[in-house]
Length: 120
Image (cartoon, rainbow, N blue to C red):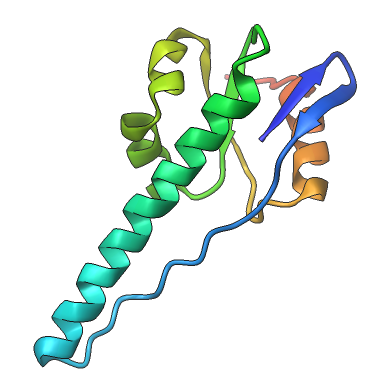
């Protein structure tokens, strides 16, 4: 996540969370791993939601752009109270970001400011 003012990156926080893959061996072990994976997903969303609240509370944002894994966006929007309050500022454009790192964050400003031209 980052806060840009014009071309300057004012504040940033990058990182990842580890969530175990689903286990398909069968039996009790599969169910135990499934429960652990669900708890890891919930914990990850809580941490990200809290971080968003902390990082953005001192800023007045004009626009919010989301990117990254599409399977995370919908649950994050449900979990994060800050994004729910600022829903009208969330752009419909989804940024094409594969990895959550500083390079991707810096590249996102270029992607946000690029114009799109549609011809018919």
